[in-house]
Length: 621
Image (cartoon, rainbow, N blue to C red; front, side, top):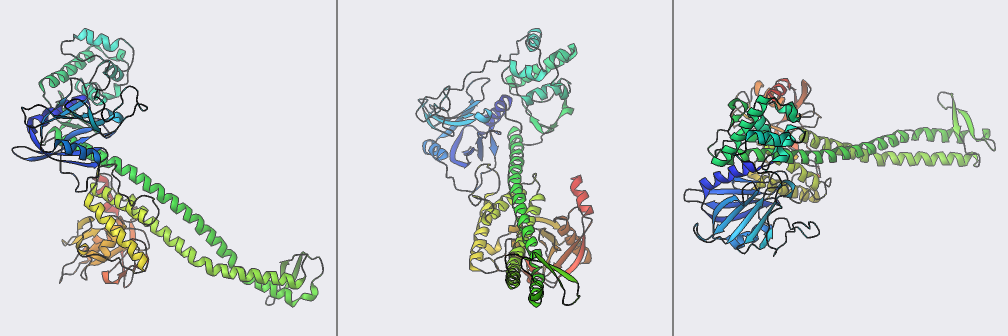
């Protein structure tokens, strides 16, 4: 993820100052431990300003309204208590070439500044610090004690001091070419490292942009400065001067490049794609960091859940193997009884001290070898065999339900694993679905603490998480009461899952659940008597609903389209043909105490789902 550098901070502060200031502060909302939102009212509109001190994505920019969730953080409440009713009159760096932004609050634009909110954008050391007019710290997002840092402690009541000054040279438009080149070539090192270590305000992203403008491949950034030709140095110096001119005259243009962005207008327009957005740099940062944080949060959560599922399935498989071995042993119970009967029928052939005896079978007359305990007589040995027979017989009756339960639990976890594997990190709705899966696993006891809402990432849909939590609670009540279907409160029956939605050839809607939470909603709350329910036969996968209106009938092509989606959203996605069952929703039931997404069905028909075309479309998208 590309961190916000000094160039981006200068650009975003300039754009916000031009379009939003002065503005009346109407609300302060903190959505997670790294992010607050300031609601600003200008003469024309209401805006939301996001301030983040996230270790990988510290930034500020305009954005959409925050999630409608309660604000339980004292940091935002302390700020709002002091600045309520004031105006935001300035947003600017505290000084040139410093990545500390000063948000100033006063009664009016021309009045004395009463409060400062400093946003320090410094990677993992990023912070937000609220300071009064006397420069005393009132509160901070991260309190730093003297034990944690002797150089710069940050505590309530301390005098606010800027971070230690950087030692690199400040870039200047007046610096001659020869002096600039000599400075970069003084110590033999890579081009990238030379630029980063000699001048302030230079970031890895800026180096890539400068090299692109100079016509130097980025693959050569790690080559030594000695490898540059005279023309390369001239082109690189022109790109350097162009950057400084843009900073001086505040000329910025948001552009996307592969996996990154830039706010400096490129001299080589073919090197990047200009973002067409009325909000400019604000829209660029909002879009980029929303997507990157979503992808990062998705990957972390995906890995966490996947590891839990793999571990649980492995443990259950060990249990299943043990149960099956014990069942194989119990299958020999009748042999033990037959040997005991043989021994009792041939007591006369036993002799003292015998360790084994061979006796003819009652039916085949073949000799059967029977191991004996030499310290016991024949009757006692037979009694031992009878006891072993009874023990293994009881074991068979006791183990069978445990084996069935373990196999069902494995099937459930494979169902969850399939849902996780089919989610796309680029889709925000899939991130919400992953959070719902985490809640489900917590409610089922596989993930400790998962039922507590996580405020680490600051992304996702709050309403969807609340709906999932309500559903999990209803599942818990259902499990305790022993009833097959979860109880629902008034108003929850109209809840619609945020599922995948497609169109059939005849124009009917096809809904596909993203996880077990949505699968149960589709089967038991959304489905009507006119719909058709689809699922891959005995294969973990999503529930699929073909939505039909009263008086309409699905054509064969509609059934095939729904079957194809059921096959595609299953563990057998890579197979060309997958058996899919479909039936009316009234024939789909949840057994008493069943886990989420687990159902039984009757009156089903089978159709073969085809996944080839869907896989090709997904690969091309």
